[in-house]
Image (cartoon, rainbow, N blue to C red; front, side, top):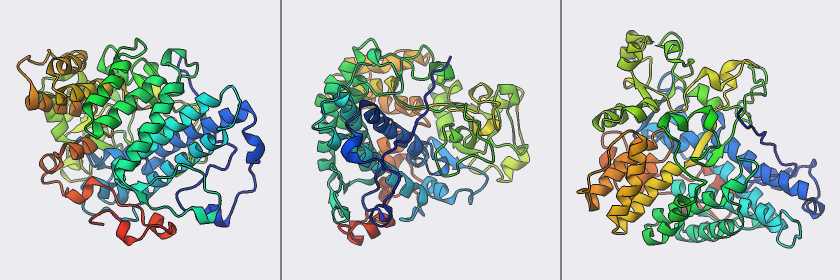
Length: 513
């Protein structure tokens, strides 16, 4: 039976973004005194769970999630939905040209990452002098998530405000930008501390909580993003050599509800289907313990897609695969992994499903390029009859998988001149997908191209593709004809942040916005 966890909100005031009017003008009254709160182990646990709760909120906030904001600029997915005006802020991200400094999805992601950082800072600062038995692990978890949030922020926004302490008053909220290099230093410091004090995965009772291996994997990834390949390799090796981590037997097993928090999972956001959400109690724009994104991303109903014969329920039509992705699977002869990721129109019809051809040709299926998505699919067994079925999916988001570690390790080995070891790690991914070993003749830049393509297929619809293309300098080539320009390498800093932060001006906005 699936192990579930309710992500409870902390009873503490969760903090704010860099400059919050709510904090300075309207301090909450329903909070516990910080002078005594962190004196109890149970309270410390509540505070830590509050960080996980904020992560769930950020990655699962209906149409404003970090999941979609990271995913949609890539060439593996289209925003889709009902039409070009359906959730226009997401269509703008997908189409590049009209991304505004007031984009509400980008603003939400920025704010919630900083709220998570604020909560982490609160835990770290208030436990420094503590003698509680759970002090070290609590600080380690808080530092892990502070590092994670800053890594996501600097990847998407570049130079950003770096806050590592709790503001003492309203006058302390103004904060200038730090360079990406400075942010990376802070991230590495936090991850080193987290690695020291986090338990191994095998020793964790609550499977949703982060492990030493997760911190090692993120450290390796951070170093690869800085092209510090030799430094990254030992961290990847620590994860790879640890028997607690492995690939699931098949690509389909990765996404099964029965394998959530499984052997391949390093960081996973949990959702449950037992809260009975319905049209009256669903928290639009707020916290929901169920994963509304699964319904949001399911094949559109209204008679457009008939998917019952393939075991799916209809959804609202967002996040459709691109033809480029479908063609890449076919070119690789990659049938097993393709079958866990997407289904073409021809395959759907052959399996007894249907597509309204007039809707497709008439543009009713916005952004449709001949395939529906199966990764994070609307499976009947992943929802509940308690409440409205489409509002109660329990599917978890896998934010970091062992498969990604192997691909990053292959990249690091290749770029560090060790192609034989790069092929070993790459072949683990290929063999799980039912593909033959890469030829031993593939080396250097040719092998790197193979790694790039393998990552495109393995991590499709997981929010990695665009940011990889940017750091590899391949975005202009791979995204030609899409509306992409170099300004899209970074998102705009939300205008609300510039307006509220006394240490930022219009000159601090990212280029082109």
